[in-house]
Image 1 (cartoon, rainbow, N blue to C red):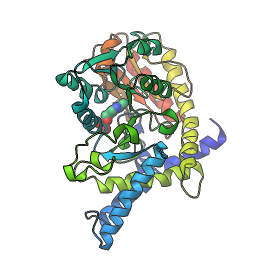
Image 2: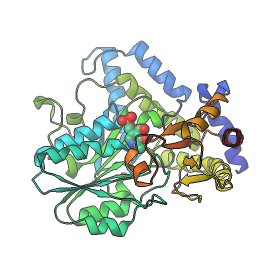
Image 3: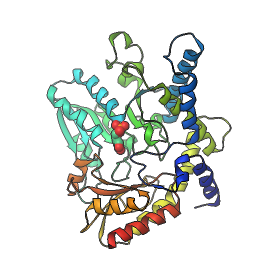
Image 4: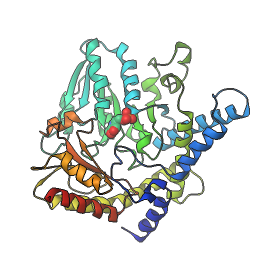
Length: 408
Ligand SMILES: Cc1ncc(COP(=O)(O)O)c(C=O)c1O
């Protein structure tokens, strides 16, 4: 790691109160920690502006402004530019369900929905339910050894009856990234919409929906250093015709028609405050789109040595099957899964957790992907997932604990 990245990592780590405890957080694909500025913004909101929006007294004016500014921040964060906008919701699972339910009345029997097997169930189940109205669900399979998805295979599945292509940007099990720009353009070529689950991507690299041309892009903010909420971007032309889950008199705005009921305004304050953290990482005085790009470039430079350490260790073990690619490149994120040839995933994971290192085992809601890769879903994988605030020292503690658990 460069000297700049090392210094930067000390600075960023000091922003996260949870990291000061000594516990090692390698379960970031499950949920990441919050920097102090996000915690403060949520606390201040609850102290000073904890009222309903849309009324002209001072606390409500503050609340309204915060909620609007949080939306603007999300638009910049994903680079929605002039192509669309973002709505908020309680979780990615809820937002994708809302989306599938909004598309439901437009489905004609025989319409096809292509669903990647590499998805978390959040981007599978809502589509499978559309079988009830005559949709045909076509699974885009993965290679059973490598977990890779073949674009030629996708091309063979696409036709004029395809309505939706539902894919993960990064698999929460493989850590590998799909070429979303190419896939969105392949979907558009047959008149289909792309729905991308960006949850396992969003904490590692800058989202750019304008460049990629995707129709819908969803991520969970609690995995991107923020509160338990989610953001869904929709292209204006993709969701302007849809009827959202909101009430009949609240169908006016593309984003607001998907924001059913009251939102977590204190959560929105936290989402907004992430701009201060990103600006700090970027070394900027103010925040703009460039801050997002610069912050994630730095984040990636911090993640790579951690990935090298963990993947290097796993690649050196002949009793381990790595799930996902073993190489290191920009498209490989530090969500690292594996299975042991003889020990149950739970045994290894529990032993590591006993040493003050948080990792996870199981199918991590990608049960279909496990099955497609011949991993029994009830055993699943052992998953260690890092983000930029994890250090090489922590990675060494992790690999030592893994080694002891495997050799026990
Ligand atoms: C890749 C991926 N997609 C979707 C989800 C579901 O997110 P949420 O809990 O916000 O519904 C998760 C959660 O772990 C995930 O990892």
